Image (cartoon, rainbow, N blue to C red; front, side, top):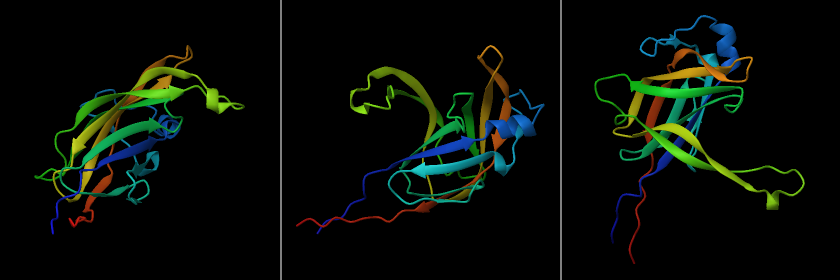
Length: 187
């Protein structure tokens, strides 16, 4: 009989930012990345996907079933799916002396896309890849911590160009809860 730790998981956490709410609620935001404007919990919500059931604290945060060694990828999107406005995450910090995550780093995925056709989706042409930026970290320990997630909001100007609106900070509670360790028995 033999047992071993399961493969490490990759969890994708998607944070949805209500850009219209922020623009209307924070008309004079900070433009200093070192001193962002802190937003309230109603401006953001978070979901995570990896095949496991994850619980949300609503807009306050997320319970993530993970174990040390698992990777977490953080994607930030505006509720318009980054079309009328765009969200760029630039820093994640956690409270406490022992961090739940390794140092966070930027990553780029050249995402695939297919043009949408309403009548015949089976023959829709592939589009050129587009860059999708996210931040990634490795889980170092289970527990919970208040996080500081810093991002820049870009909004459309009258010429349809994205320009920086301001720098913001969302402070969710993130809880990393141990996922069940599975054992395999060799025959």
